[in-house]
View 1 (tube, rainbow, N blue to C red):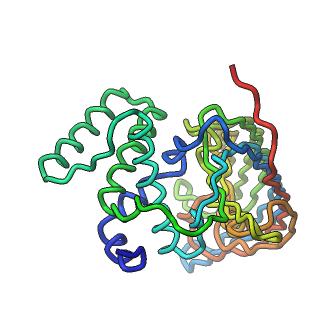
View 2 (spheres, helix red, strand yellow):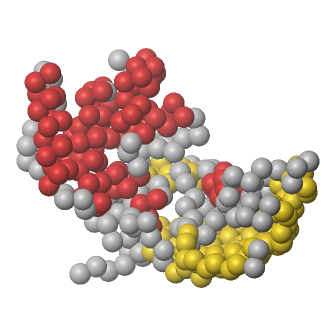
Length: 341
């Protein structure tokens, strides 16, 4: 049965499997003979924003905000060097979904065969139930280790993908043009995020039942922040070897959220706390859209509207207006692998 004929069935029966698989779950496909590329980008943001809210009972509240931010990210991804027929990061959702199903199914077959065992998919309800139980046992054996959990999820998701689409195991009869670049264990990584934000204004204070001045200052200088995963685990890329102008397809642009100080002063009281600092969602969305399909290196500057609060507090009603000037430089170029012991 052709891939196109199976598309609707795949969407209905396999959607949760593929959506649950992040790029770090696919990373086990990388071998020692891989091609290595370094992903590097630098982003600077200068923004201003105003806020206004009028209420007949409380009066007019307002604020003015400014911020400067800089993000620098460096990490590496690897390819096994094998040209693939399908784009793992295709711009069309259905085509991308199909490519991931096929990739996972074929890798499951290779992993079983490499271990010296014949590749046999469970067919009966009893065999499938036993496979699910074994997966839960293996996850429990990880004892909460995130990397172990990811590896187990990857292993079994590959098997379930093959169950959903056994026709994917058939070899392609046309030459491929795409290289898949995926996360890998021990990937080099470096990040730094700096941020300064000042907000001043007047708003209604319930404690004194009137309008009072307030100020809010955010600052951070965060080096190699982590959410528990390696930096490269947040990325996946495909290179079209036949496209000389826009060869790169990147699945995501990740900005580690920096932890820094928030100093808030209102009604004569000042509080200071260390907490994750806000990164403008409009900026992150634009970065991701820019690299979704782009040249492997480049630079661009733009101005973005800011309809949401810079401090990330979405509970304030009213009108937010402002703009952010964003400069973006990136590269995804081949490098020599780092020697490992």
